Amino acid sequence: MDANDDSGAPRQPEVSAESYFQLKNLLLTCIMEFVTLSVCFQCNQGKYKAMAICFILGIGSLVSWNSMLTIGDYYYILFPKYHPARVLTLVYQPFAIGTMLILAYYESKINTRMRNLAGFTLFFFSTFFVLVVDLASSGKGGLGPYIGICVLAACFGIADAQVEGGIIGELCFMCPEFIQSYLAGLAASGALISILRMLTKVAFEKSNNGLRKGAILFLAISTFIELVCIILYAICFTKLPIVKYYRSKAALEGSKTVAADLAAAGIQTKTNDQGGYDSKKEERLSNKQLFVENLDYAVDLFLIYVVTLSIFPGFLYENTGTHQLGTWYPVVLIAMYNVVDFIARYIPLVPWLKLESRKGLLIAVFSRFLLIPAFYFTAKYGDQGWMILLTSFLGLTNGYLTVCVLTVAPRGYKGPEQNALGNLLVLCLLSGIFAGAVLDWLWIIGKGTF
Image (cartoon, one colour):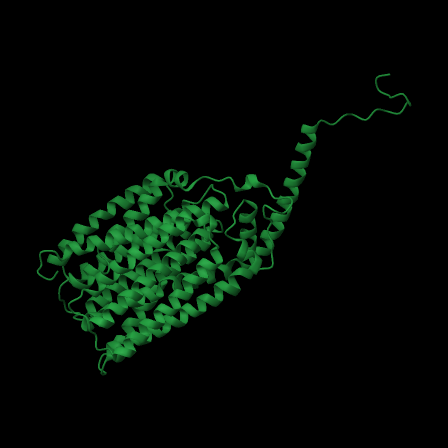
């Protein structure tokens, strides 16, 4: 009897183990797709809230440092012999790079939540103490207050590495729009402070200690913004459905850095000691492999900021000469750079205006080196209008190319790899800033003012 067994009942067809697992995987895939679509539908309700918070966090990541740069005209009156715009940038960057190097190396083992909160808290207290230094010295300058400000600039560098690397790394496994919003916030901090600087310069120009009053106002606003960022990141951002979804997805892909954030949102993740944990999910490309695969993007970011920081802000403050705008001239130049840089970070939102070609990005980045001789000859022979136009173009290319690189690079990787890649790219960005700040000193060698 072929079709029946001894009892006469029809024999059930045998199901192979391979077919069983295929059926099981298909069923699980269908369930996951259904859950993903359901969650995404609910998450989209919080997408714009998340983008708004990312924008504010971007402002908070640089508002303190931008305040210190924007009140450079005040510091040049207090410390005329110490080149404050150049020295403060040179002090800031080694601490930012050193901290970022350590954090990028140990990225997979660091609690991202504590890292970002520690960074914003350090920003808050450092900005507050810059204000305290000025009030304690009564705005009289001197070597002591200058050293104090340099120490606090170093604290800004440490905080910047914690926050910028941590948040960009985290946003790399979320929506590209989140990265764009955060980067726009970074630029908006400069634009906001520059506009406020111009308003306070008008308001206090004829009053006693007008520059000092404006500087104090900036530092007070910056301190308040840092406090807002601490609250937003610690409470509001964590509880958004779309943020919980992306963090849960990253945790399923093996990321350990999001565990504290998920716990704060009431979501528990499995560990090695718990059943059902798949250790294979921890398998990911090493930092070296990620760096090699994205070497061109790393070079892009490094060179973008080498060119930018070799001109901004030191050259604009000290090497552009005297023109009809008088003391307003460097203030206007800084403001134009910051405003156009901010606007340029929204251009990639238009799909046909976004540059995604890796070769195209490299060509655009290398072509920016032509800006260095352009600034030299414009400062020597050109009028203030040409310098304002050139400074605006510097900001335009800086903001546009930064967003293009950081939104395209993380594609095709899983959560932990995207986080690691984000940290590596921020390290390259900060390295470019430091190299540019060092090269900026070449403008004054041989002028008798070094």
